[in-house]
Image (tube, rainbow, N blue to C red; front, side, top):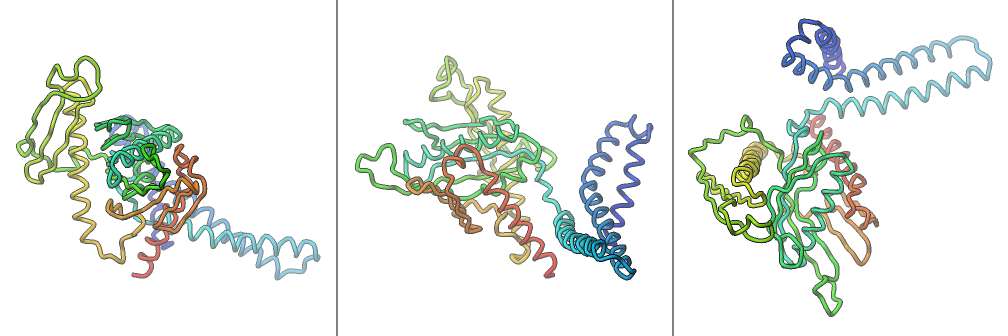
Length: 357
């Protein structure tokens, strides 16, 4: 492991020299590429240097303990020795995590799709609650949220809503939200006060660029139609809504949120690219052995991942058996208390898979 890190350290030094070279700076495309590589290596190299310093401090402390010392100074050296030994163990774990292969999608924006499942109007209302939760989480991270398409229910919920969240590392954190979210509460439409269980499906797709997916425009059919629902004067008067069908796969994307047909087409194509990219990723992932795949980060949208219990004020993530009694805070966008343990578990599973091979 450390031989590999030493190679990375040498590469980091070389990249540092190159990004400061005037000729390289003059070529902005090359400079940006090298800076990205340099920045990616920096956390690993910094941790490794911290690790080497701790190892040196341990060796020096052991040498000093072989010499005649007064009792107070000897005690101080022993304490520093134990601190540095513990530090080395912690740094080794951190370095192993940093050396894990990076998910190439982690830095991408995400397209999230929320669909009401079992529960009718109540499921649609909960879909709206989840949309609000993710919007507030994104706002807290200073990410941008943009609705791509929405199908509203009669009482203010969403039968289906697709939206993009743009920001640094959005996919790296939100990818764990893919799956079935279950809600237990007394619906607003329930007069007898009985608790109902409803379900909503969340899909998290990395934003795909044209270079990520081989999309032949001859393989798609674009139909235009008049938008329905709320949307101002242009609704029902112009053919601004767009339906895009990918003929080989049968995937269909509809978009009618914008008054402009062109903007609806652009948004629809973004969603289609993301769905096609997800299909390719799923095919690739199915070829990876089950032992090497992390179940926490599998992104299986049919898996029941979380329950929101309103009477108890409880949120339970079933993948890691985590329960917290902060339902209001979670629905207000405070998701890090759930996402951070999911990331830790995912990393631990990947480490186990890597070092068991």
